[in-house]
Amino acid sequence: MSLRAAALALLIGLTACQRATAPAPPPEKVLRYAFPAAETGFDPPQLADLYSRMVTGHIFEALYRYDYLARPFLVVPDTAAGLPEVSTDQRTWTIRLQPGIYFADDPAFKGRKRELVAEDYVYTFKRFFDPAVKSPLFNSYRQEGILGLEALRERALKSHRAFDYDTPVEGVRALDRYTILFRLAEPRPRFIFQLASSGACGAVAREVIEAYRGHEMEHPVGTGPFMLEQWRRSSFIRLVRNPGYRTVTYDAHPNADDAEGQAWLARFKGRRLPMIDAVEISIIEENQPRWLSFLNHEANLLYGIPEDFTPQAIPHGRLAPNLARRHFQAWRALASDRYMAYFNMKDPVVGGLDPAHVALRRAISLGVDVARQISGPRHGQAIPAQTVVAPFNFGYDPDFKTEASDFDPARANALLDLYGYLDRDGDGWREQPDGSPLVLELRSQPDSFYRQFEEIWLRDMTRLGIRLTVREAQWPENLKAVRAGQYMIWQAGYTNASPDAQIGLEQMYGPSIGGLNLARFKLPAYDALYDEVEALPDGPERLERLRRMLQLATAYAPMKLLVHRVVNDLAWPELTGFRRPAFGVQFWEYIDLTAPAAAAH
Image 1 (cartoon, one colour):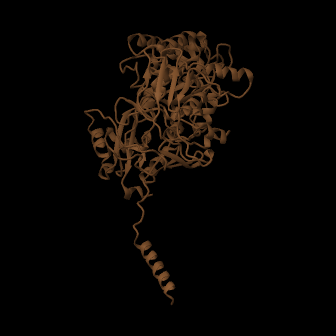
Image 2: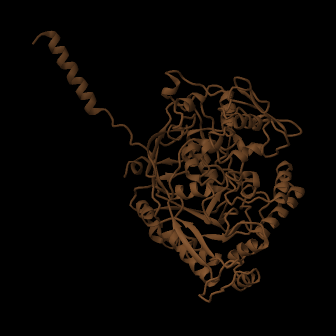
Image 3: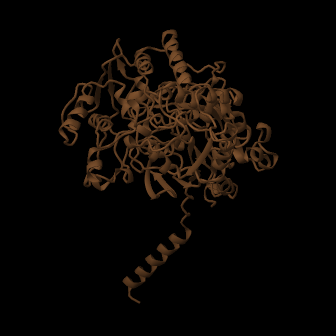
């Protein structure tokens, strides 16, 4: 053998030996859990559902976010360099960005590193006003009174031309590469809450939107800690750590008396985020398969114990002994949400503001047994809701009482009799005042959990002599139909994204019909009060107007308030640092997983 050949053989042997002795890479840390309903897509301005926004909230970044451990809330900078400079009249907001933040790599950038700049937020806010985007959150942003944006929208609508993104507007503009200026028509003391919604107004790049025109929902590209790697619609979502994510370290501000939060801060402070490598989300709409998937360790987090299984998991509010012996972890909290039955105010049977139709809705509401819903399908994991103002929002009072939670079939029957909803032909079912059949239709979902509610509704309406039919469809299909006004009654929930009551109040605000106002309720007196409430700082004056709005909502009954939910989360012992956000959606980057369990499937 030649000297050269011998040297080559030795080199090959050493390389093989090195391969054999090289340490194996650490197992991938993967957070696995399930959504109980399907996502709709991943383009922030086109979304209003919680599940899609939970994903986009980890891909895109807003100017501000909610501190992970502070309670009830603390707004802190995200991509902003600091808190905004706000004029004394609260109409001018100046915000500076951190330099050196980059979007995840994407072919839309044609091989260059794309830095986040002020113009990206200008473009992002303009998209809410583009008629072609059809944002369900348009009215939420319109109400902020960002000068010039609504006029730009009207010009596009009247000219039937594309929205002009290149025309500067006074209300949102870049003063330089890293400075954004907002000018508002009226004082907006709580504007920062809009700026802290990564799931909605996280920065998008114009190049990406234009490169994937018509397919924006499938190609989310942001500056956040995670990137979309795989998506099977309504089935499976996988996100991975963004390799280009800037250096962000764990920091938070738990309350002084928060022992758990203080322990997590001491343990994780200074760690680079995110601490896990990937997130895998399965869509499992039925409660039992979702529960069994978790018990089989196919998931390491159960984000919301299905109500059917709370007696097994946390009997009497305590972790079951068999789970405690295996060191499972459990958390319990009252959610900042409201669950309700919407009435379509444009429907000829249940809609309308005339006395007869108001009486019908109030009678239906009085005939719905909320206590039975809580003790039955919900297994005690809820409290009766009195108004649309959710817990932990300004204006929420746990002692405030309305007829929303009343269950009074006798009063309901008396109302129906008084306003002419009578059984004229003696078949046991009421007719409308004009003698035509009275038949209600409830939209629901085709799973065992929702069928329990269907049974309660059927029993309750039969007690009133009212026929009820049920139309079942998957969550995205129902949401699409309801937004289009193609429904009569729909029972659903809405989780708050901010500490303000505005989102709940907007659900009955006339100009938001087609957006958050799914009931399609329009009452000038209510709308006028809403406009006043938006401009007022939190305090007695704002609270007094808010209460008047709630009185009008109770009187006209465009929705039947049902419950505020109690949420229970469960995790395998390898998951650490978890806390369900009170507002916002971000938590993935703040949790860690021990390596051995993270590798288990």
